[in-house]
Image (cartoon, rainbow, N blue to C red; front, side, top):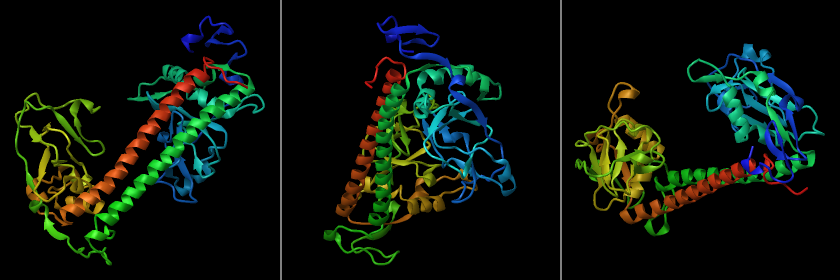
Length: 426
């Protein structure tokens, strides 16, 4: 519980710490009907289609978030064995998971009759909705204190997987506010959840908009009037565009300079300082063969270009020899090509030109990269196209930052409201 509650007027010391005098201290078993386990059933390694039954993966449940799309299609002969479905106002708990996610729980707002729980997930419901608000309990179960308690009680020696027993969950002591306060706390936190969900929808919409604009602008199906008319048929070369090999647009940079800062090329964050990457630094102590990359260059993973791992650099530094560095020639916008190299049909071409027998050995060295053909507009049109797509990226980035801020605010509110550090007005 919050240390700020200690010895405060109007607070009392209990087995769960210092809580408001009006609150009770009880076991979870007095509040809920127990834990109903799902059943392990055979399933296909594919998502259930509309109208079919699916069994949830453990990845469907994280702290406070439910992902119903994380499921597998149940084999027909196993359908009768699957019995437990998520129902409105229940809480699902992860019985077996990694150390970080064992005991993870989420409140379910509506019925999911076509989804079934595996044996690694439990379903929990309150005993009496006249005394306990299910949504409030859902937030409490996902709070940092309950997460810590559940994680500490988990056991297991099977690799990274941990397990928690029913007794370990039901014996947890919880602070229990009066019903009106439970309701108000749930309403406040729900408002933040709605804001987070609305922001998430906006992000999705902008990502779909960007995808559509890339399909139109990078092919000439949509054009700015001053540059010419859009094409009428797929496969046409737009007026003013030229079909050329990438070797005519780029030259390879082979410079080295071990004194420059070490950078990393990522598919989602672009070119960033290596120390900002969460993965362990496995780079060689000897940086003499590391390649220089400069602002305006495009770097790509020689072994993963067929997966779209490339980025335009805004920094100067060095990167691993596993990357190929391309410098645009005069009249070619790096921003435009940065987007073009993320366009799925272009990535497909990179896959075709990659050399190797299997996926793990495929590589696209510059001499093969230079043979890939692309339809390229004038530099002025390249810049306009890149500007439109860049605007989408900025909007998406701002919305993602807003969403993270909302999540931080919600986390802070949970800490204060669910411990009684901050009281709500009834």
